[in-house]
Image 1 (spheres, rainbow, N blue to C red):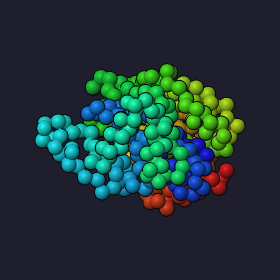
Image 2: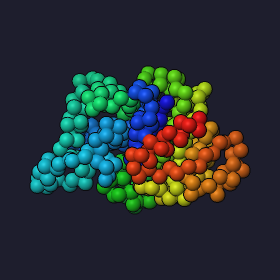
Image 3: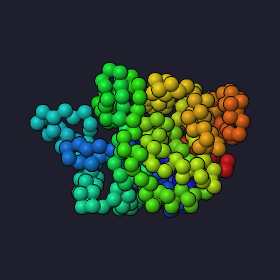
Length: 308
């Protein structure tokens, strides 16, 4: 199975799948459009969120960062007068230091991620969508063009978005590992990640969408919206600003031509007929998809496997 993921919502389902599938049977392809440099370090927030979550050391209250984290380095940065809008914990710094050093020595992000994940005891494969740099740039009405992390973290995704650009996506190449994983997969799952900020940058990697469209396996998307609202984050707000209807119908339209199956929450059962009237070839399944606990994650993952 291959899962496309980014952010906390995607990591939750990836975690559920990882817990019910035999070791080595899951490959998670992760967004790198939110990667950036801070204090000379290469930060890969979505890769780290997925890696920490699958290693079961993620902060349970936030979904990102590490459990039992300390903040001495950040406190010292603030004492020096630095704007500490992007929070880097002390243990988290070790990940970024090792990644940056390895990248400077010429190693690929894929190789580095595999080594770090293995050291953390992750039994499945985590792959960056590409080894080459790309960046999600957010065009806003109030703040102009912002790198993703400034829009999302510094300004707490409040500026109005008028356009998105996945800079470098047309030059970034699909790695051999991603290509092999997609080619060998029996099932591809698009996790309930933000379609525009997490999934679209993955699909923007040159050739990756075409690779998925040429697949022989089924492709399932799990809706990131429940009753037209995001569980967390700006999905509904951003879809509205970018001209997409923030509903399961809007999700079906966004993934039209890519997916065979759409999984929606039981709360959206009444909308299924409307979706099928526009997309009669699409299979739709409803189930509780809110994942508050680890048991919820396993339950949603198992239901997805069972329905196939």
